[in-house]
Image 1 (spheres, rainbow, N blue to C red):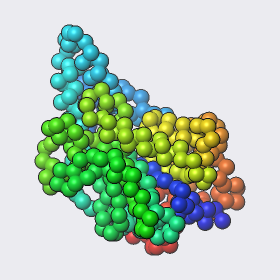
Image 2 (image 1 turned 135 degrees about the vertical axis):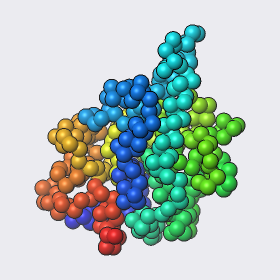
Image 3 (image 1 turned 90 degrees about the horizontal axis):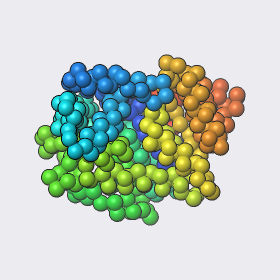
Image 4 (image 1 turned 90 degrees about the vertical axis):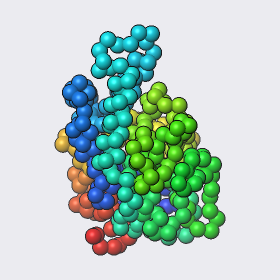
Length: 355
């Protein structure tokens, strides 16, 4: 029954989804660790030393997102001084140049090609086929456009919150659309996207990849980046949508987490708050890859589950699980299925042969 339960969690009309970088590996997109290595190739020694000195979340090494967060804090502090730092390395202009360079390296690493993925297409088409499901919320931490391209290639209706085509602008009201007749996807790119730019008028715009040129991108945009740019309201709006969706009052409200390692404290806090808020009905089911120190990883999830009234359930690779979703017999049924890999979960969901 455990495998059937997983299918029911995913296809339940009250389920929303959080996608991490692990979901894009099957589409030949880099992991956050690979992106970090790409970024490191172009860092000056002072910034590289800073990255090596940073602590990552939990026991993991610091990655490019940790570096961006720290640089943004430094910029905010530097900009608040009456007299600039004496060292050129940490003046506002230097930090700005590093942030733009990091964004460029990320875009080069991810690529701006509009390419769909057969695994994503099968997953999305399966969700759309559920008769009772009309509005489907997809929250993504990924910079790539695999979700959007797969939706288009499958002729599925969706919005990413932008209106227009060649120079699209962000319009939150686009998320208010709920179809009464066909499945409609709402895609929330919580960390921005490789095809978003900072426009001359200080707004975030979305453009086709072929017209992006060298425009400054709006990627890697955690909460701290509000110190840097005036158009951060786009990202505040997206995070508010995420928090509001997790606090939905439906009695069967669910979040299914795929390919995300729980390395972003802002996202983790939103998930915890969604469970712990008064009268919450949220249950979370996550499928994550194993870390080098699985015992420490399991310990972090057990602590988080305890804070969340044990409504957080996590499958860690094929090694163990946290939470009450599976008893011993249930775990044996899914053990060895590799469901932490997106393509394997899609195979379970669709009954299709993995490619």
